[in-house]
Image (tube, rainbow, N blue to C red; front, side):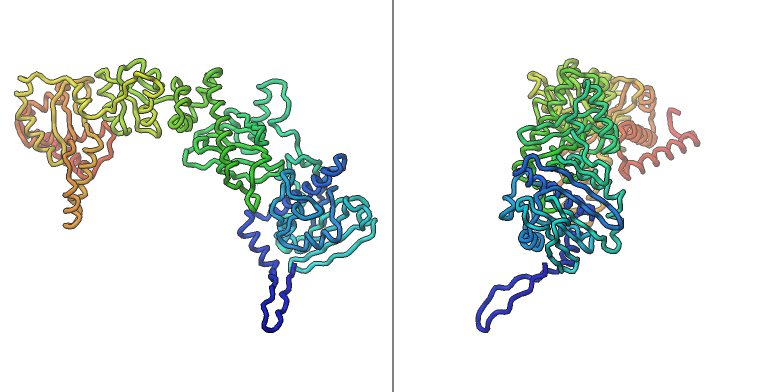
Length: 609
């Protein structure tokens, strides 16, 4: 592993070979390629399994055993694989980057092998200061066993051994721990890592006498009934991920060589949270943090699967993004989609339990999938003025499906619209507005309309002209008081009687309010720019309820100043009822109105007291 450069002849250019600093290379592996020193054990298992696979290709009945022995601060790994000759050792083990699976004499790389990058034993130097390999080739039975010993300074030796040193074909690897790394070779750690990496390997792997492999995989085992399978998989999920799933979804894709299961999370998670999954490659654990395995909308499941066709990255700790992975992702998403439609068709109780937790994920899917929206239409819950309903139920009750774009708008109009018989869907939550707008595409003939201030006001009863004329002085004083706040005052009669005033606006009105507030606080330059953006957006409205006793009483006042103070109080109360965030000007108004009313009550000033 220590390559010396050759000296060129005078006046000519001769090729040179690299000098390899093995310690620097190991440092590079441990800090930048591998996520943890634990991958050394995966590399050892991988080499052993690949060697057995190579031998069984030529000798189908050859033994298939891997044994690991952690003892004396070191580790010994024995396999019954194809083994190496002395020529192989010089060609393969002493050459960084060459793969035994690609070397002449040991076969071209094929899908049967786990390793594809030829890093091999080099990774073991992350935890070992010395590696000793004793091997005997199955292809050349007459060749003596060979010993290769390497140190982390880049030096190595090769020698032949007597036949008794390794009577049968195969390879034994001895690791001696480097200072500070002995914990990685401790018996308990070796057993834990071996079971984590190798539980699904196809051969008999043991640490001492403790079995590592656990086949068939839980999702491939026979069970007496669907319910017992569900219980067994729930137990497996709890052992693997630490939670008991709501359900499990079979993820078998035979054409892609994929078998596995998706576990449905028992609690809601944020759609922005990247789901991570466990992926085995031909039985060997590749990663516990695969993020790109499923479509983004399937954030409500965690998967564990074994794959044949997916391509690992150089570190073999994640998946390479290519056309195969994209096709697998789409196919796995289709399996989860089919599970949902199956619940809708045959198990509504389980579907209801699932949607109670994960309706957001299904809404995300339905937003882009018309067939899923059609299937889930009777089940997905929405907040409406009629309570929690599906869009199908709501559309059956109302000839026009009104909806609001924001939660604030819904809170403004919901109580009043409901009292007037106008049905409204809260479209302000994630995905809900998009789904309501998509409703006619899956339910032809449905009329969908966005609810705005004009629509609400139009549904409120007008006041008798004579009565409104009698209150003209009151309305003029109220409008003058609220005009600086960008709010008009109108008089209507509506139910419920307990609501004295309703604050109505829309996004364009709020935008204009925000622009005006920014203009007031800006310097001359920015004030001019913001002023040029002034639009003719509709103003907010304070709709006074003529049926409310408090409004009728305030309407009888004669003192303009007192009317103004009372109008500010009604405005502030309407904002609070709509659960609107208060601007600094609104908070100041509420304080001013409260103080004014206290002074009026204390001093007995004002008419109509």
